[in-house]
Length: 184
Length: 117
Picture (cartoon, chains in turn green, brown):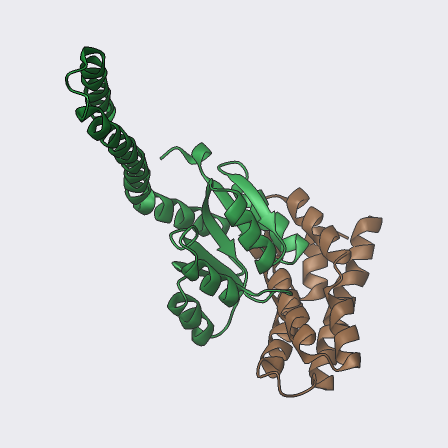
């Protein structure tokens, strides 16, 4: 896995905790920060490169559970994996986070090595899905192009006696098949 | 005062801090940040004004930051207060708040001594 490709979002209202987590991860990942849930959602919507979110629970303005719920409702965000990182003593809180869509849960105090390993595992497991999603988006673009060309072909079909029109049709069909062949 | 002395004085775990933060320089950097952190002031202010939600969040933050820095005594005191406040239906217990206040003061005073050496 090429770690340099991944951008992580750390959502944490306390500056020390933000910096401590960023310190652990900055050598392996690109890291961006948000001090509450509302800012986190804005950053996720602005930055399609965010691969994973590390999310605190208890924050002013908007807390972690609200963020999880908002992400689940947003097609742009629902597939971004979330690891909740919080000072926790209760199974109830962990259960609640997982029920609301978090993929994993890390309690403070955390072990830096464990944090890195859990992030690496999630990114590695989800990498094939990310690739498929990117291919699907590419295929969707090609299909739209094909559809546009086919629509134009229908228009030209009405002028088959016109040699210039016939030549354009051939060229357009060739373009369509070039695009399909370029899809790997 | 050495870092080990500091941790012994405040009821923390230096070995655990070293295991997780790896270097004394890093431990000191985060301890100094802790010295400037406003969570204790937020806890006191919210406890005084009756803002239970903010008091809960502040206690919870102190618990987490202290835990990450292996300030065990402070983290434990903050944890107990956090759980007392978690239902959000009563004001901070004064005895529990006092424990947090005293443990926090111990950390701040010892930090000043550490910086002086």
